[in-house]
Image (cartoon, rainbow, N blue to C red; front, side, top):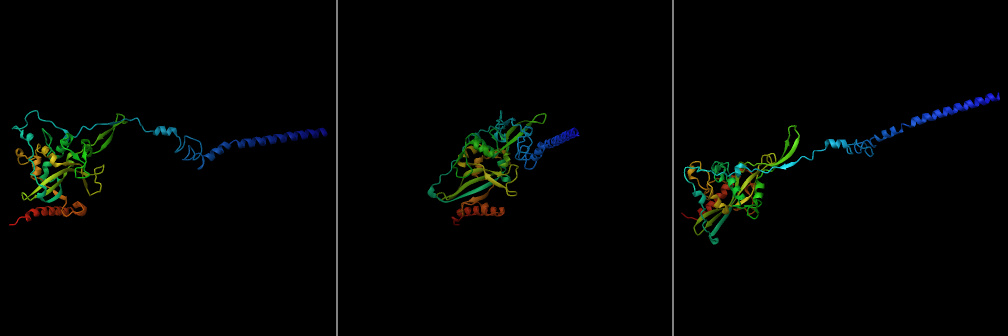
Length: 365
């Protein structure tokens, strides 16, 4: 009986040991998925799988984040930075640059007088004799019928006959000097390069494609400006009454081409309110010898054309006053205090009439 009891006790102990060992194995099996729980913790909103980390907001798993080090995405979206950019030099505007003299006499007569013409010198006015002076700024609109000569676009032996083309060719050849448009007192001379930059229309970057539709290079080209888009010219002049000769003289001091200020798409800066600004100034007395060698268009008689110098001296153009020194202590333009354009024209005519009447009132009949 004792031996049987001992056998039963040994058997029960072995069964207990087997049960404990099995339970320990189950616990070990259940604790193995802890790395998965850690992965679930890392994939939470504050773990390591968010948009601020490298698959997490603050964790360390990389290559799957919005702001992290996703190398594959960077390589896929990386721009092609090795595409060359070529600056294409401007070929110039044919309407302004081309001078093609005829190799034969392109007329029925020999025309050599215009090449030797010189302007007549002004009459000298002593300072003591100038008892009355007024400065007037006026603008010439070449779209008016009387000013069509300014837009005459034919080519002759001395180049294009547009007035703006004549001025630009003279500036490039340094026959006349252009001055900065910030003031009209001819204080700052400009180089021909600066003048052409003011006349240019900016730069355009144009992609060049191959047969497969891929961009092979970029070309930077200068925009060509239509010379007919410069259709206004500002004139600064002075009216002087000489008591020695009892006459009213007018002396043109400067001429400035005016361009319209627009956005890159060609629209006005303020819709419905076009703005204009001078491009540069030229000193008219210096340009008289040049203008005496160019003839203005005459639609009635091609053989009786006058020179540009004669056109300005004889006042053969239409214009309207934009500013004057008459009753203008604040040096303002008419547009700055008269908004209605019709009233501005009437005020300009009133200024011209006052200057004209000064001379007439000196005479008694």
